[in-house]
Image 1 (cartoon, rainbow, N blue to C red):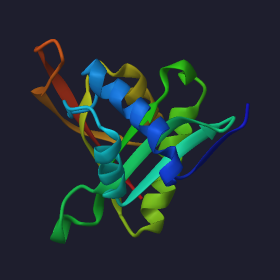
Image 2 (cartoon, rainbow, N blue to C red; image 1 turned 60 degrees about the vertical axis):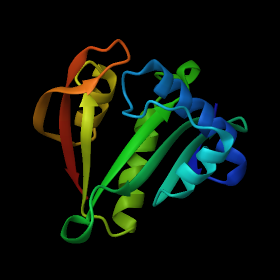
Image 3 (cartoon, rainbow, N blue to C red; image 1 turned 180 degrees about the vertical axis):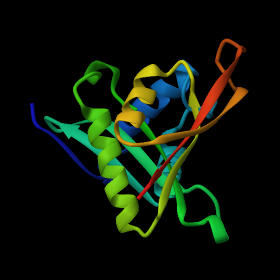
Length: 161
């Protein structure tokens, strides 16, 4: 099966929204608590600096969002979030999304990518980020409240572009 990563188009929004909402619903990776509606998804994804999608057989199987991590004198640092359709896990899609986001971020003039809140239990994401050259810069005990109400440690990562 051929998988391609490209910038998103408006017709991709239903697939993107389904993947995003499934991760929000799990409550163990993204900080958001509210699901996206078709209207809010258009605004949310449209407000990002860039959104990429992974497509296989005409279906959206993964996505990422890319935006500044801060403003002004720290505006050269970007942040990204990734999501892969659970049915497509362990097929290299996450790697493709991360690699594309690093390339796009550099092309956009960002100098650093920083992740602010990778939940310590998210072993597959941590393994992927470290394999792609991200460095740990710290941990925040109790920095993430899971859907079960328990507070978990988050790890901060960065990657020079």
